[in-house]
Length: 195
Length: 195
DNA sequence: CTACGCGATGGCACTAAGTCCCATCGCGGC
DNA sequence: GCCGCGATGGGACTTAGTGCCATCGCGTAG
Image (cartoon, rainbow over all chains, first blue to last red; front, top):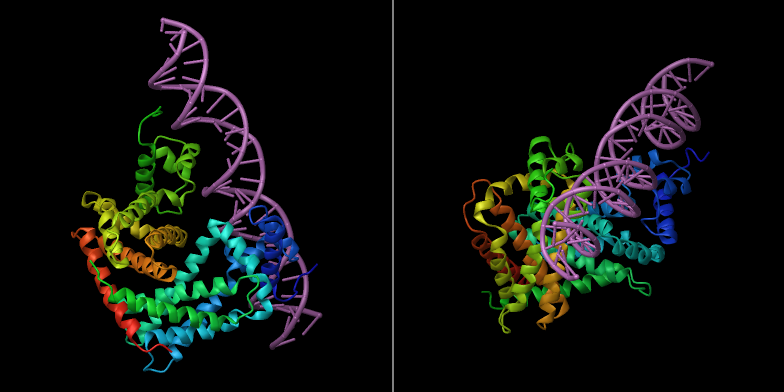
């Protein structure tokens, strides 16, 4: 028995990604994922609330980092500056030495609406955390929500580009670039006629 | 038998909302919804892909209206002006004579992450349609995506406020107000220091 | 009026996700 | 060596969701 081996969560995550790559998401049962990780269905659901969640463990850690980075930003930093800091802070979640698995993960998510759905939920939670963190800094509600959406858009775009097979650039660089372009476009949008 | 009675979809939707209100979402089985509508489980799944979908039938029609409104906007209209037109166009989806059911619907969705998840998916699809419609007008990719996010944010905020129990204002008014405030905030955001 | 066909429904079997509860195991402290 | 705690195993159970075929209602051709 493989009982009591450490890192059950990581093993399940790895086994899941392997099987999704080999047989596809739908054709992979939770029992099979657990078996490959040397565990059982019961244990799987003790680590992940459902089958989808096994692909999004990192997003929860990310949300914490995001919130912390905004709170640690200097008091006079603008909302967009806070977002920049947050995007730099989540560099650890996108380490280059794990870059090989990213394209597969994205492909699986893109191919299954229920996984895309879960990704959207994670990002909505992230947006809620950013909004709250900005509000704590005295930013008004509407601005906080708008800035949070811009941050999520920058994050999503950057994460997508980073996860490309032939990408070799660090996440922070891509994110900074995207955020800066969004800032420019936001100015143009607001300046245009609205009616 | 109630076979061959018209509007099976509407009956299922109504029955579902009733039961969700009475017993809660989790405690209501698909079989029960179908039974109250005078139908069976088989027929339910022929009308809605899953249990969640029964609450989001209107969102699909909305997406079409949204896209059509942007395409019909005058060629020289700015992106934000297009969004304004789209928000006005979906007035039909928020008729005052059906306002009574809105608070319940929102409460049920808010209480269940899986329903919130589905709502996010619908809005993401809406955002994709807006993005594509703006691109067709010659708007560059980044601006289109940013504007679409702003539109979705305006829509979500307005829909939430409209669905309040004591609200009596038409949707278009609320939406226009929200969008205008977002435009102001976007300008301020872009003007601030970024770095 | 009958025969035929089409589309919507009913019904049933089946798979797998997810829940619940309890037994079991391993490790560390007393 | 005993004991308790936390993690795992295992099995019973409910229900979402799929697939297939029989059935029904209605319109239409002849």
